[in-house]
Image (cartoon, rainbow, N blue to C red; front, side, top):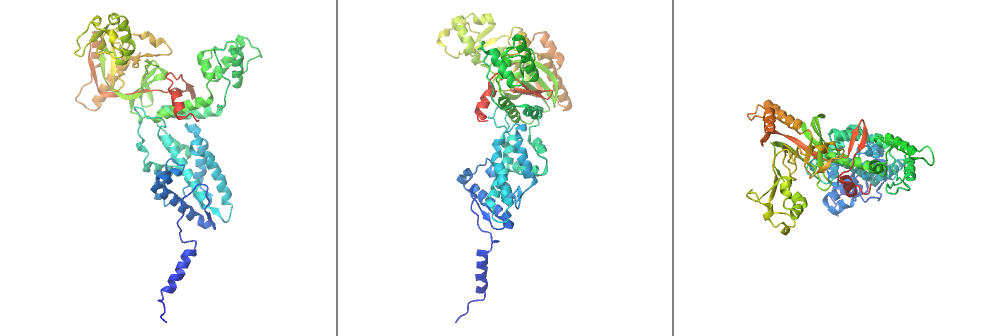
Length: 564
């Protein structure tokens, strides 16, 4: 009989060993959350968890439907991170949690201090996974590899989501929103490495916007949260004059401010209101004002969301230049910043609610002395056309001129105004001078909204506390100090750059203004300008809540945070 080759006697046992030995790597099925994958011996856990991670993420990378089944926002980034690390678990070793896993869980429990929401990062589920993993680790046999793999994925997902939400605004892009170009694989890899090397609070500081305003809000949040009561309160209806005193008394008591007797007179109620106002950092005048009613009817949940929205707006900003003009619409103020220092401040008048000043970023590149005002089509349609239909003499009384497309002056009495419904085929121009709505100086910067900074002939408006009164442009009380500042800055920068171009001397500007001459004044080094909308400030370490004059906070809250 022919004997089999000797190699046959080695092949058969090897096949048996490979089929039976647990050390031979078997193909793991992709993770199905909630399914168990039990290992018989503890020493097998690490490799089996790695196998489950690999099968899950490779499957997700190859199949969009498989990726969609996973409850993670950054599955593609997670796949690359684990692949680069040979699918070794990031948060556990064998059946023990690593210290940075505990650190992440603790951070997720206090992310409200950074304007984030624990529920966005599956904190409750992670707490449950943690408890199950602790119980599982006490077993000497039959450890659940799928549980440990799921825990690892959820922790990684939470870390990447926190990093994303700290780095990039969750709000809809505006004209200055920086793009998500920072959210690249290298960034997420750095996030994982950095969190393992630095304390959690230092990690969050590394991620956050570097703007002074953001840092101030973040620093003030813990004190607010320590006193916040996330509950509902009695609504105060100021129109219900009969029940107003008793409702106010009840509402004040909900904030631990009690009146001196069960049926207080107006003096006792005013004293209680003063105590409440002082407690909340409001003007303590004891008056039942609309501002007080609005404050009483705003819950701490709504205030927290207002802070969050304002923090998100700071995340929309690009890296800030060394020097810039900052107009915050709800404060009716303009500031010039050099670094974190304010070098010039001015009151401003901004747009009415129906003709809002837009949020934008640009750069002032020229000024105009004694400018003419070409009235925007929106104002013509809304205000001027109806006035002309009533009385063509309206233009003369306002000091306006009517010009055709060739800039020839047109007699308004020769036009049949009734045939126009919206726009008109003419320009309406107000001549230069002290009566011009733009005043005697205009600051121009490129923008699609046709707005600018300017002086005004209605300077009495600056004495008002609420100054949303314009058609959208920003009227500047300290227009001359601002113009002087820009010219001196231009001169200094040109000298430092050894540029051939020369800045316009301040003396020339003074001369043109004195002579009431219309002059174009270029800035060789344009000054960045930001028109922004921030309704929460920090004064002496405390949050100050401003009126949402355009209803933007309410709109954003309903759009992005309705379920919070």
